[in-house]
Length: 429
Image (tube, rainbow, N blue to C red; front, side, top):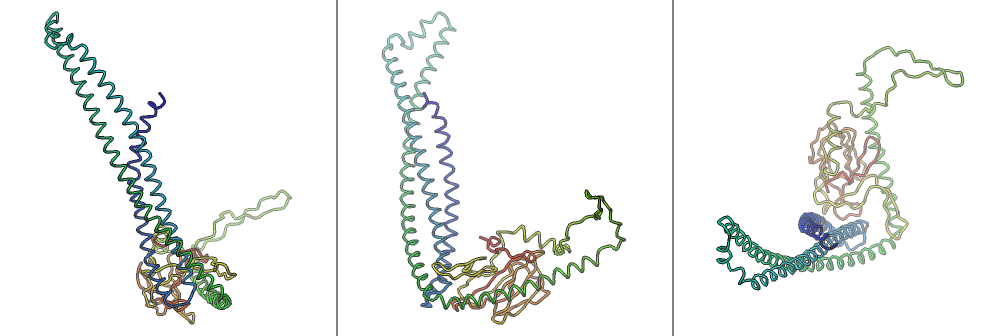
């Protein structure tokens, strides 16, 4: 009895299961396709870095990124395998249900045939009709015979339909099991690749650890360079804020200040209060263009284009640590490696160039997008000047060489007024 009550639920779940994985499978395949594309790009850069025949931070960062992507790829495969297994299980339940229904239909049909055979002499069609007491009774008997025949035909049709449906479901099961086998084969291959990359990473880490003193000097130079860069950016941003404040003050109507209200305090003293308290003004939303740029930049979080083509993040925002060493450094932005130096660096959004400066070992450009500021450093050349209005994707300069001399690199810093934030979540995935 309980099983009969569960049958409709099992049928519904099997129907949902056959539809849902189709969409999930398409989503997972699209995700893996994008991951594989990035893996191919990283592999190209890794092969170039590896050809230098020396272990570098870039090599380690590329391997770390490859491992992260391989793990994401495996998670996607595991999700698809779980979906296939769930679908196989629900289909097995449906086949079981259909077989039970088929058995019931066969039993009912057999009983009907036996009953008709047993009483065939009593139910001879012609005698049955002509034995009617009147014409209306004869019509009713004819209608009964037609209904009975239709019922028998429907029983046969139901049995045949269930047989076809069971055969179709069993065929689908074979396809799903073959699909699962193929996906698991890909899974095994990716697990092997991940194991090989982890071994490569361990070898690179060991080599880097042996050069710890050398990297300490390199990291100290980077910290000094980042400090100078941030000081230059902050000076530019501060200048913009001061200019906006002065402009806002000049534009404000000059009225006499109202007399402050004096309120008694609990201790018997008095306290002056501002009758028109206001919040601190946001100076970087002064003009309509600033407001538009600020809103547009905010609304495009996660959709901003990358500043270079075929670039890979090799140093993340914030604290970075070389594994199994005491080497750490804070990155004010992200470092993006490119296969070669001299590649075009592009503005990630519309804005105004508010600073172009030289840090000694490379140029930098700062662009204002309302409250937001992007700075592109480690450039060998710059193709814009202060005051230039730029568009999304417009070239502003060329990448310089990476810190280790293998390939190119651009450092991207993102600020909300004077606060540094991670640029990576803002870029198109």
